[in-house]
Image (cartoon, rainbow, N blue to C red; front, top):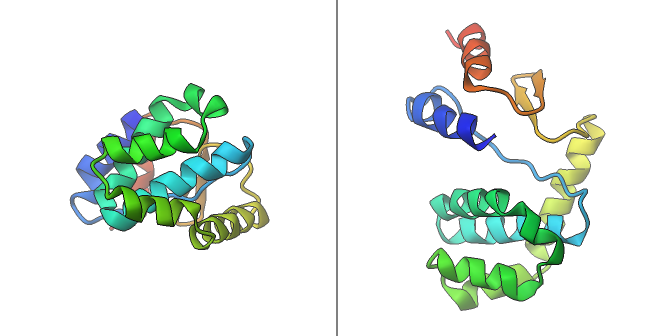
Length: 142
C-alpha cells in the first residue's frame, strides 16, 4: 500500500482533490491497538509524525508481534517527539477508546479486510496499484 499511498498524497492530496483518512483495523492482538495508539499520539504532536509513525510501523510490522511498550516509546523518540507528552497520550485511555470506537464503526460498516479503501462509497479491497486509484478518482472527480 505504501507505494500507492505516496503517489496519492503527491498527486491528489497535494492538489486538494482527495483527503486521505486512516481508520484503524484492530484485529491482530493487543499490538494492533498499541501501534494505532502510537501513530495517533505521534499525530497529536505533529500531523506529519502520524504518517511517519504509520510508515515505520507498516514497514516493520513483523516486529510488532513481540513489541512491548518500550518499543513504541523508542519509535516516538526516533521521530523526535516529546517523550513525556507521547507517554501521557500512549498510556492514557482517551486515544485507545477513540480507536476502539473507530474500529467498531468500520466493523458495523462491513469492513473486515485490510486494506479497504472507501472512495465516496465505492470500496476497493486489497492492495491496489496507483493506476487503479487514479482511474477511480478520475471517475469521481469533476
